[in-house]
Length: 292
Image (cartoon, rainbow, N blue to C red):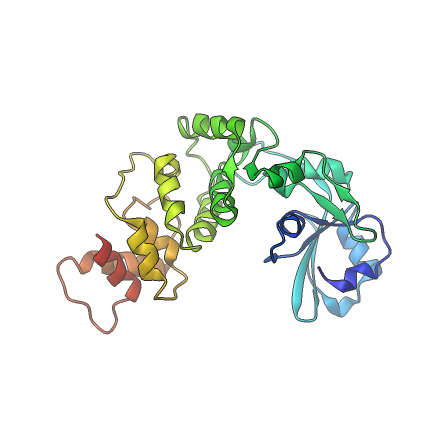
């Protein structure tokens, strides 16, 4: 965690989410997120040199700052609701208590805060105990209804940390997957799919199939006859940002917003069923054709 923030003597500033979770797991955190109990933008303007403030989002009460070539997001504490299930939430209040803010998060393991000044831990929902027992648990029974992308996020944490859903969370997940609301944000779903399958872990694909998460991709999906272990082994030899697309290439991805490069990979993989590769053929397309 960054030493700069320790020099700010404000007891309303907290480390939150993954960085706190990862400290308990004794693992290095990819991102460091902070939360200010109040208005984070006002806090930044009063405590951080202007040259270190690189982005401000007044609508969400967030500010991005940079120190020693590292970027940090500082969010205002807030409450929110989901008037349109499966889409971005609506902010109800900026500047709520840290306890209220933690209620809006996805899983208990990510709902822990650590005060910057003295290291005091805020753990209202038993996240530390769930970390000890390697459990992934939602905070309330409508969690997946509000945001079904949390299902893929749970898969990601399961693969990364070797955790499993607790019984209630698994029941809620199964219930949602049996009655999916397809009016959801597929941009957000894609983001979670990328982060999960770019880990290049065959277990993620196996759970994706066995727990019927593939139905989130759209209606009438067919399970492809491919071996995820072969994909994992092949991708260990080849660096690409499109691991996720190779794993999921045999599903119907028409609901997922694909880039031009992603569409090119899929188009070439189909062409390879009848043509030989050329110098312009993406390597990802060749891998997809080989695992068919």
